[in-house]
Length: 236
Image: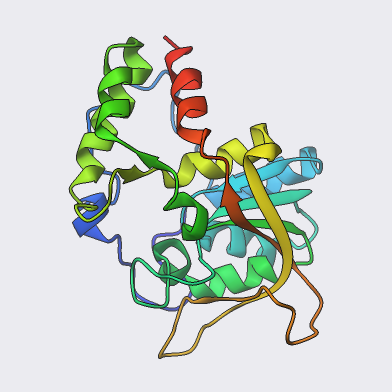
């Protein structure tokens, strides 16, 4: 994939994700080899072969934005992205990390005309995995142990919260069970300026009169963490 954002320098938020951006517990050896082609080429090839696909994007959107720019005829039917927020930021006071990391790519995705759903901090900061839930799943198979170890690792970045927010899994869950989240269709613009760079400006009350372009998650079922725990435990 791309080694840097569209415009800005790369930042992996090492204080949360570690120096590599993917730190945490040791994972089992992979049972497949890396693909030889660039991520952008892989995405374009996959979208051409599967135009009905839903892409769940759980990181900065650089590769997706590049794919749209270089292969305009290759698009998925839908994108569900983890990122952004209506009213809070976790990388700056205005911006969530995944959007802040490459707002120019995020703007391209949100203005693509595709069916886009934003699962942001407004809901993921309600999806808190508590210490008790973590301990309950730790002994329930390899997947449960790895999940608990990941929560242990990321808990250090959220000492002010009652638990550890489960960001990325909420976006995946929305595709599996759409009833878990409440969505509102709003006009959304990504700020690519200097003061509030990376902010997702959500016109929740339709004050601009501009056409809605993104489905924005505004509420989550409190049963989400129990639902997720059971699905992880079922993997053994």
